Length: 110
Image (cartoon, rainbow, N blue to C red; front, side, top):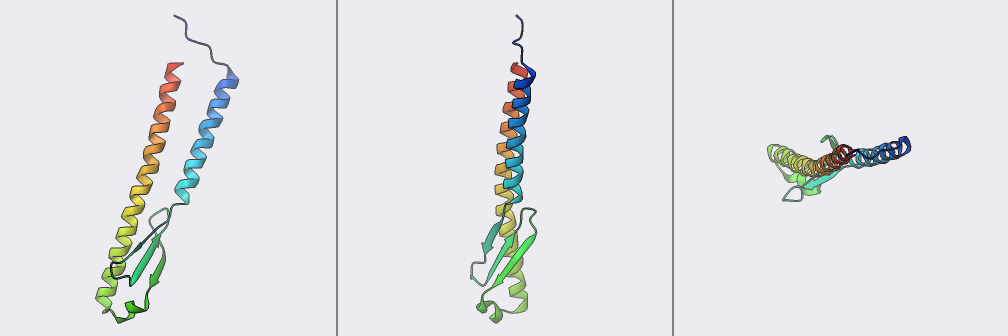
C-alpha cells in the first residue's frame, strides 16, 4: 500500500505550527514565578523561572526573631518556593513531552 503524499506546503505549515507551540511553551517557562510565605508569616520569598530568589519580604515581626531563626525561615521559605516552581516547571515539561510525542507519532503515520 502506497503511503499518502504530503506536500511541501503541508509540511511547512506543520513545522510552523510546532514552532509556534514551542515558542509559547518557552514564554510560559520564562514567565514562571513562585512565591512562598513562612508559616509564621514573617518571611516571603519569590523565585524566578530559574529558581533564583528574586524578592524577599520581611514582615516587621521578622525583626523580633533571633538571627538563626530568621535565617532558617528564609531558607525554608526559599526551599518551599523552589519546590513549587519545580512542580510547575515539570507540568510544562510533561505537556511539551506529550505534545512532541504526538508530533512524532503523526510524523511516522504519514
